[in-house]
Length: 270
Ligand code: BTN
Image 1 (spheres, protein in one colour):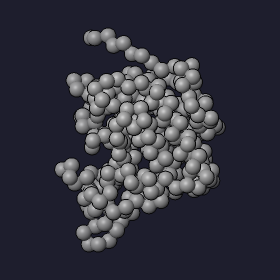
Image 2 (cartoon, helix red, strand yellow):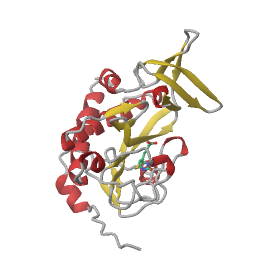
Image 3 (cartoon, helix red, strand yellow):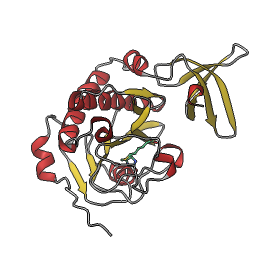
Image 4 (spheres, helix red, strand yellow):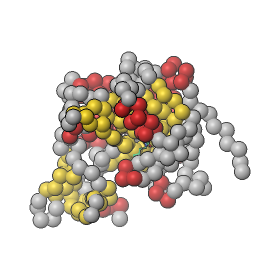
């Protein structure tokens, strides 16, 4: 076995790098944890404040959407969850927080690397058509109101896929390092990401919807798509998204369906 030198993050260096006024000012750091989303949900349920950041160097049970796993070797990805308490939104509008966060991932990646990320519905972050990041949004609802939203963000920063034993699901993914040919500072990316999320979330709180900008970043629009949902598959053309992030798919019979959750394959992907 080859010993691997892993350079972990730490609370003092995260604190020193932060450029935010409230987001990430409470940091919970783990060198190894099951899932930062599980940790953040537990903390949110016992009253952790808005802006709490849960971050890890390694997850033993990292989760993606649709019960998929999120694989990232120790010290090579950005693996974090953010707690929001958007009392200004109704539960069905919670996806707006995820839209803000995926746009911020794009901002931060572009700023730190010069690469040009795009979004694949609902919130995959792609570079040149390959997945470099993903978001997992989980809601806490109490008495029909939104108590909290946990947004988990995974970015393949310095992940190496070739010969790494990555699960088959992730072999089509890429990383910032693979795209650039050199390592990227996770700390610098984290600082840029939190600054961008905070600025965009403040605009959302002030009533500015992310919808237009998010839609203009979506590679999915205009494409022939196949949407796999529990129990059925919908084929059609992605013609738009609504203010709450639902995908509008026009079927061949001319009817348009509103899709809230599912796995989208661009039919050009085969
Ligand atoms: C997806 O693309 O399906 C979403 C991936 C989300 C992964 C992140 S990594 C940090 C946080 N903790 C988790 O268990 N999942 C999210």
